[in-house]
Length: 358
Image (cartoon, rainbow, N blue to C red):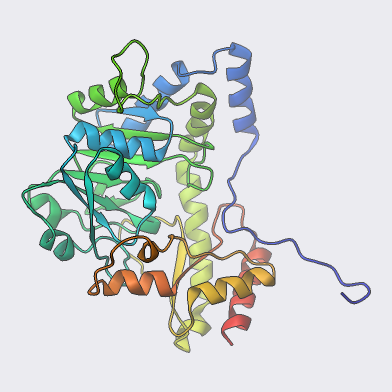
């Protein structure tokens, strides 16, 4: 390094936003001396149900637990099949496998990156017990064709709520919906998850299964409770959801402006606008450069962009016809996006990307 040179701090891919309200909320819980599942969790369940257009919800310890218990409550069991997007988090497959069921991969659509209904329905068999649809990166999934097929739908809202599909809010489109409150999510409690539904029996099954105490031994009862400490943080963040969505949308619009020169030269395809979408990730498609290579070069100069979905192709038998998922794994690059991403940081990201692609 030359004399007088400085090293810029790396711009992280994800950065949870916490303020004074989170400190006050967690202090309140600590002072109450009740930090396990209690009144904060109960209040969060009521607030989450209202925010997603459901009659109720059940908080659990993680997004994976939420999906596993939602599938269990839907009737998925050993020998069942569950259709999942091939371009998605491995947690979807893990939740299915934990019940002794078989995940069945279906392709996603290029530049939407959500489940392709035609691909999903081609993979339906008499053993299909559910279809998981994900509003990936905040893009509304195409749910109507799947609902028309009569297969139970589990709606994965791990990438956020506040969006809608044809006027129906994320979280109210299937028989059940789930969300994650992991540290990188739009609403970040550190850990945690939730199942929402208007089916009282389904929710009763989830609430019964999350607590192993005083029940007969079972592989289903795995102590999946959420703590009041986590619930207090999540409630604060849920309360400012509208602000969070607005700040993220403003930064997405700024990216679209700053990256227009690259898009005009055909080097990147910017994420599509869509009625009802929210901006959890700003994921661009690279036209001619492998995303893995670009991510490495960006990190070396202080920008943590990421391939936002771990490449399943190295772990499962991969259908050759999955063009959408192949493109996604090879070319999709997610840029930093969060409410306190500063204008200077955003300009650095775009300048770095331009330099690498040049």
